Length: 452
Ligand code: PLP
Image 1: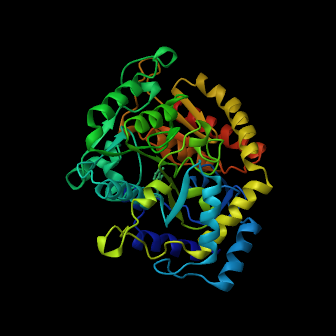
Image 2: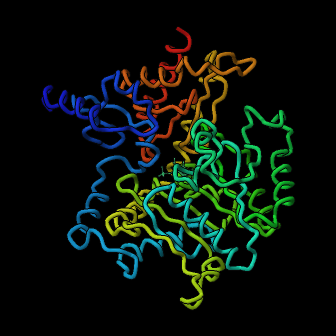
Image 3: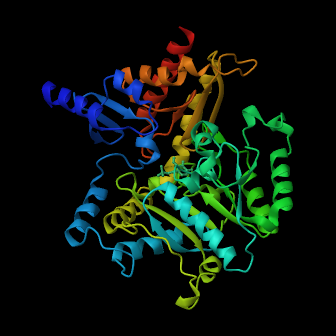
């Protein structure tokens, strides 16, 4: 691309585009990085510079950019049908994908409701759970129990069940009320317990809350295994299974939001599977198309589905649907994505790469401003602190996380922090050598910024 064209694009970006989760005052003061191409695990900017895609283009990329198998599936489907509605019609890719999802999901999830992003997949689960109880004669079951530090998306329903004050507080007056159980954030345990002998004290509190409110609860919602957006907060082993068991014992529905953890990120196809958990709802998006097209799905059980079957005039229909629900292009790519999981034995490879990543992350503990290193599968978070002994955080004005990622960018790595947690979420198919470079750059960037 010519210098002139590049400058024009940068100017038009500033003139016309409002970027998500971005303080635009800062954005307008800087030169934007404009990504023109992707190749495997690399992003390439308009000047031809290459960067490792260290957060999988916001946690979506599975097999890398430009995989021919996925592009072929897209092209072949595009010659047949690019879109047709699921409101009153069906199409082959959405049928085949629903069947495939039901086969790979935890047992009992038999029905698939499509949408096009993670927030809507959660919104759908919330509305279904609510309507299910309304139609079940238990009209007082209107509340949800969620966890502090939860993130389930940006629509008002999904924000209502969220628990990150920085993102959610300002919308408080617009949200519905939820009960919030303690977050299993072991590094900063809200109960001031030590993980070695805490006996999952947070689960005990959760259980008490569910028992206390069971008659008003529609559902419990959890990001199983890792609270991602809160800073890769990894749950202790047994946590997901315990939450599921308690919800079941108390007759409350359980929603597993696997928008981030689904499709192999944590080392299992779905994080629930690693703890033998079958939820009543499974929300998936992000990796479902390998990161090529927007698509999401909410899976649920026959029992929930049957609660909506009735004569039309009883109005038990699930009155919800998006224009692009079940888009055939996205579904065709999702099918090709799942084929690649199988043909490449990817889940097994993720286990190996995750072990390699774990070993590479060990030396970060030596750095004087690394408070905690958390990892599950190919999801990792490095929490930076001002003072290691007291775990005192850096002040927000110090912008330490942001400074680290800018340093990494100069060294050929694109990552995005969550506050002062440096996130590593490489494509599942990353080569070990590229993974090692990514980790080295991040190490050096943290060292440069925090120890200078
Ligand atoms: N749920 C979880 C657990 C997520 O991590 C996210 C996004 O990061 C969402 C929901 C929202 O997904 P989307 O950004 O596609 O709306």
